Image (cartoon, rainbow, N blue to C red):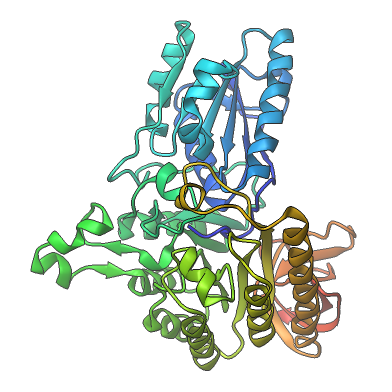
Amino acid sequence: MENMMEEKRQGETLLWGGSQEASKKMYIESYGCAMNFSDSEIVASILTKEGYGTTQQLEEADLVLVNTCSIRDKAEQTVRKRLEFFQSVKKINPGMRVGVLGCMAERLKSKFLEEEKIVDMVVGPDAYKDLPNLLKEVEDGRAAVNVILSKDETYGDVAPVRLQTNGVTAFVSITRGCDNMCTFCVVPFTRGRERSRDPHSIVEEVNTLWANGYREVTLLGQNVDSYLWYGGGLKKDYIKASEMQKATAIHFADLLQMVAEAQPKMRIRFSTSNPQDMAEDVLHTIARYPNICNNIHLPVQSGSTRILKEMNRQHTREEYIALIDKIRSIIPDCAISHDMISGFPTETEADHQDTLSLMAYVKYDYGYMFAYSERPGTPAAKKLIDDVPEAVKKRRLQEIVNLQRAHCDYRTKQHLGKTEEVLIEGTSKKSEAHWMGRNSQNMVVVFPKEHYQKGDFVMVKITDCTSATLMGQAVGYS
């Protein structure tokens, strides 16, 4: 899995809340990638049927759930501090129960339940349908756990509860798990092997979202380019499929086409892509359908072929650059973003310079950059010594960040003078008199409200910018 999926990043928190009337109240916090936030909507749906409403007031919650991330140490430490805080709240409200969901649940189940005894329930990403049974165990005074990884669970039959939403944009999960064993990543061990969701259930969810007023969806997966529907089952078992199954199999480009044609006015994004799996037909599909956004998140992690090999990334620097060139050729105005890790074990100054030179070649529109943190249980932790000093990691990371800031400034200035379609998502955080929306390239655009409404597609002439935001004036509906 890549380090990023769409908008939600490590350490960010989302409080799911509302005013639903129910006999019991649940309070959910989510951390990490967009898949976790999407999963929290599934959990809310399952528990709503069990009589739970949602609350934003922790003190009145009967059940507190923390959807966790293990991809970096900082995210885990944040969650631990929250769990300690919840224990202090339980002293005031002893009837409150605390459960851990997601990737940390699978990795640290024994510590949480048996050694530290700081939670009542531990539930892995594939076990959310078992929540009603686990809650009964907790109510009977027993600690409850289910972290079994599934070979076929995709939650395709669960209609997510859209909570704390802007009512305009939504996530739609299309795959779960990851088969790419990058040496730094815990995801294959916490979320299991790749399996894809029935495409017809995906289209049905998108149709429902449109009918309910949503105007943009992001198709989610640890690796969306690996999407493969041949009737169900793990992707690795596709080799055993019948000739008929293979002949009618639906790949990611096919799914994009299905969704784009099902709702021609619905904006479509996707995340996350893997360079080794992105096929050229996906690029042609993006170019062919105007409602598929010109925005690709394409994590590279390092600009050094040697380091990429140590990471078990199945592409070289040269292959990645060739893919970038192909994207630019087929989708000239496509925004490209990245994930980058500084200080991976054995990284030299020459390797670091390779990363900076790759960035200089691509000039990414934006990126997500991190210093390497060893994750227990990963191949890198088992086989490689974390030998880059922290001070060196931080210095290299800062150089990467500084270069990306310059490239962000360069890319935003390219939009000056252009008139671009913007989907209004809500009021600007800095001005009640201005709307905030995004263009096809996923850049934030701010402009005066006038008579326009949230959810409108508006043509905006870009007149000014910062390194992260475009500003302009609406000239009419698109």
